[in-house]
Amino acid sequence: MTKFADLGINKNILKGISELGFEKAMPVQEEVIPVVLETNRDIVALAQTGTGKTAAFGLPIVQDIEVSKKYPQALILSPTRELCVQIAKDLTAYSKYVDGLKVLPVYGGANIEAQIRALKMGVHVIVATPGRILDLVKRKKANLSKIKTVVLDESDEMLNMGFRDDLNEILESAPDDRRTLLFSATMPKEVAAIAKNYMFNPEEITIGKKNSGAESVRHLYYQVQARDRYLALKRIADMNPDIYAIIFCRTRMETKQVAEWLIKDGYNADALHGDLSQAQRDHVMNRFRLKNMQMLVATDVAARGLDVNELTHVINYNLPDDIEAYTHRSGRTGRAGRTGVSIAIIHSREKHRIREIERKINKSFEKTEVPKGKEVCKKQLFHMIDKMEHVDIDHEQIDSFLPEIYKKLEWLDKEDLIKRFVSLEFNRFLEYYKNAPDLNIPDDRDSGRRDRNRKKDRDKDYKRFFINLGKTQGLNPQRLMGLINESTRDNNIPIGRIDVMKSFSFFEVNKSFTDKILEKLNEANFEGADVSVEIAKDRTSKGGGGRRSENRRSFDERKDNRYGSRRDGDRNKKKSSRRRSDNRRK
Ligand code: AMP
Image (tube, rainbow, N blue to C red; front, side, top):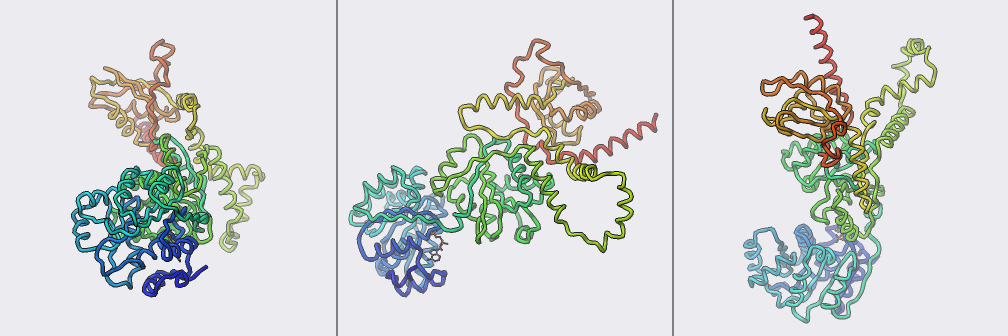
């Protein structure tokens, strides 16, 4: 690798970049820097994020600035606000020892007046999103007439984001004798068209190698119904018992909610979001760093200050709006010589976003099936058996008890012992996954048929009940769900279709809760009226009602508890104590 001085970088800039730890040039820098410094040629470079392309165009650009001339001499166009800010920060750092050199980021969605004021004070390099710079030019607040170099960074992304007309307009209005440097991770037709229309005999450079981090990351996606996102997340976590992951959500609300569900379902998780105090943030981050927590649910912003190298997974609970953020998220795994997995949980209409990201990162996603209940059980079971095989035995502590234990278990043979041991640890898990539905959705033409089969499957899981309350008594679906939750003291019962009639109603509930519904609702009271619930007669036998599976209300993901038995156990205790007191009354 070449030294920067050998590429023609001057002393002041060398001083700046040596503080950043840049010693040798990266391949894209070796290729681009001499062309920019020594020739007037345009450049089309195929290079991705992480290859060092910012310094490849940034170093010769800052070196080329005539600081005494206080007007914009270079314009760098970039698709997002975050990138603009990052590039401006990088260029400012390169030129730390170049007196008076000013770099300004301008981007949409921020106060334009402040940007106008900053421009008035004189800047040499503008880093801009296309829409905003065009706006500033039209208001005559940004002067591009003396621009020597235009950089189109992440060109494919700018076009994906619909900036084509803006780019054309900017390139039309930039001086004819300027130089254009185009960078893109991919070369779709639209990017090639820009190169053809606005560049003259460009030098073509292809940088094949991505940074080593990105190479070691596998990208997977799981496609489920939007409402099944959380269930899919649980299965992923259950399939990976040693998971150490950041789960990225889009909003604070979502972050809080997902963490709450995970904690309630018995996972070792917590949330990191902007509503926490500094002390709370530090506490959560420390627990995670020390691996006292396996899953951290976070927003992009909140996770920024967290540097952990050993993540097994990065999970996109929801894909970020900005594709660049996906690269940052996934780059958090597969570091320091390890391999990592970046997972996106997407719903049926988000497939195009996967394709966009693939284009951007120049890597393919593997479509992955959400594991079925049985697979998860098998994985967990063998994980536990494996742990048993490798457990440390503290002879000092247990040896004295062993003779008595052997004696007590004498009547069991080896097979019996194993069966009992597995059941003891595992019954609740097996129970939870026993009727767990297939969460996968197809993305092909069969989807209609498979959807119907899925609905049929769900039909099999549900029991339909009659209740003696209807609109007249003030019942509506929300109040009925409230009644079910309150009277059973369980917010996790999967509720299906609800039909509220004038003076009675029907509702469906996962059939494993049949006894509980009958027992608890028949003890309940609604607005002073006694509640009476019974299993509904089969609609088809009465000849009415039509197809049962149509318009089924989905069951809510929250209603599916991981084990569903911890609190049931408590309730059973209550139930039996109530029975005991009933007996006493008798
Ligand atoms: P980029 O592709 O411009 O986003 O750069 C990727 C990362 O590599 C950034 O964190 C840069 O600071 C870093 N970087 C760029 N050039 C060098 C270099 N020559 N030596 C060490 N690190 C570099």
